[in-house]
Image (cartoon, rainbow, N blue to C red; front, side):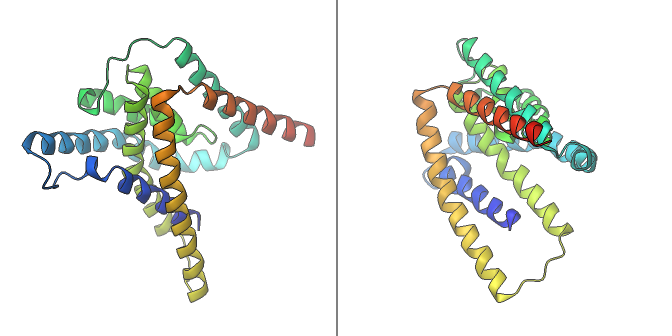
Length: 224
């Protein structure tokens, strides 16, 4: 179920950015098609580290790092880094995906691998990585969404191959409803998020992560 609703959310990214992602649109000229193909090349380059490191480190992460303390700590650290990035904010040097180099895309892909630590957030890791390289908030968020497409499709396909599931009519119905709801909600959230960051910064998200991480930490420490 988690895999299927995840695919619904990723499909919403494709739909929202379809005009940017489709190199074969009749409305695009040669230069726009080249720019779209370059975007895909950078996306593929950016996802290579996650493919390699994910396969090697995945079993270790599941065995040793899936616990509340790790998640809470990662939430807090991620929040602090987001706030620090915004407070030290300098003039952006990368204001479009076209201005992002292939080397930069690869570095962001390496930083994305930090998201293997539970609680880190793949999107937060890639946005932080892009902003550290000088990308604007919008470019950082867009490239994070673009990287999500092959990354999450590959992760979902890998999980499906490992899963031993027998589908009945009732299960197909449940999965279909989950997929549809995930798609619609994710589409609305992406649209709202992109509008938000054109006007405001990531500091509110930083505080949210710190507060949530602290609450999780306190709960499990007191419960223990």
